[in-house]
Length: 207
Image 1 (cartoon, helix red, strand yellow):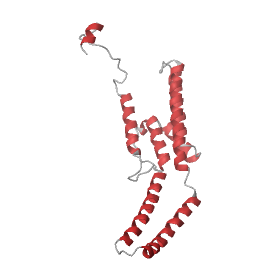
Image 2 (cartoon, one colour):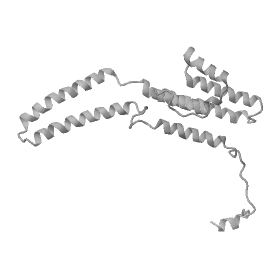
Image 3 (cartoon, rainbow, N blue to C red):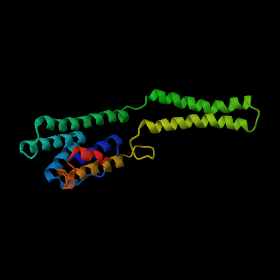
Image 4 (cartoon, rainbow, N blue to C red):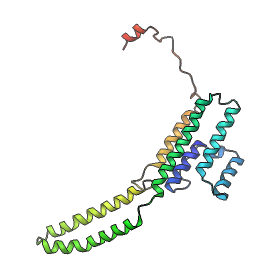
């Protein structure tokens, strides 16, 4: 569920559906998969919110069943961390949902077009050199158009373009962290060997 929720969150902010690798989605039972599908496709609920609720329900049920034998103050930190993750998702969505104001876009396009038309005329009147005139015309026009295109790329850094954030890599790192928790020895308690130095003064001299 956590891998699916993380992947769905990345797909939501990037607008790319079904591209994120998740851990064993088919391992969920048919009732859970059907409920998730109906919530998203029939009722139009937010997929990430549904998955977070399923995750919290699973944690609560495991706590009541005695599987998670953890004091409530410590377990509440788990709910807080999950909620904080969703808050960060909402903050990230502000970047994708809040577009650059359209009147500013129109003004920038108009000024760039005016520059393309007026700059060659002004430079041709003021500069007599056949080398400097094209150079002084090309550099400012190319520079401002390039800055405009770069700002368009930076406006929405979520996607599959070369300049976008590596969302697939973020999902792979998340899956790797979950695999670490699923490892059979992840809950091993570290112990000391017979060679361990217990005397403080002797241990201090070894450093």
